[in-house]
Length: 335
Image (tube, rainbow, N blue to C red; front, side, top):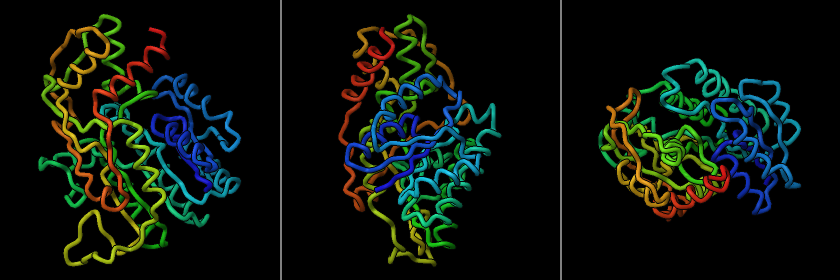
């Protein structure tokens, strides 16, 4: 297939592009290489893809409608995976307009391009953050998600609503994937595993919010990519079991689906740090702090729907995933 991947120089996007190329797909990457975190890491990821004969790339932002339309016109993708976005819960408190520009305006541009170019299937990144103030665990796609606690989460919920509108009005098949705390080699420097590793190796104290007592559904990047590809290959149709008298966020009379994609394992942050210390062979000095604004105490992913429809089965325990990350980090940064 010809697959256009936005955010191809990003953490998940670069891993996904590699896997698609390995199975014989043509991939066109679209990324603005912005400076939200060190662009050199993005460039290093991209350098692994550029030599492949079936990979093309353009540097531009989703907000640049002309550049996006040109990419669609030149490459004529059959399917699209939209992973480009302004990421990060905490940064959305500091720079909210960046989230509207990239995650709302940019996503509209993607939807319009898919609509007018007859794309077979759009898969896009949502987030576990949409569950916001929900406290019933594990989080299920059948649950309401109307109480976001950060603007980042609100933009991701908006993406789901926008996608449904295009599925309903224009018969554009769309699948939204609510990612749960992805980690692994080539990861994002603003994520806890990257921050903790750098500071522990430098002999600096690590900031542990909520006194380390919150939990996350940590999901290894290879498991995430497997789920993305399985979703990409399964084009949704209208749900025959949809009941307009009892609607849920996961079902629709349109060719639309939303899935959780995670590890289906709840791990306390203190245990995550303990595993990292074992892999590094060093103990950490911890600054115990309260929960940050915009964060939620716990996430836990019910992946039953994705397993049922695609056979998705995450299999990487944190002991293995964290070890692989540390091995990559020491190699890449020579420490």
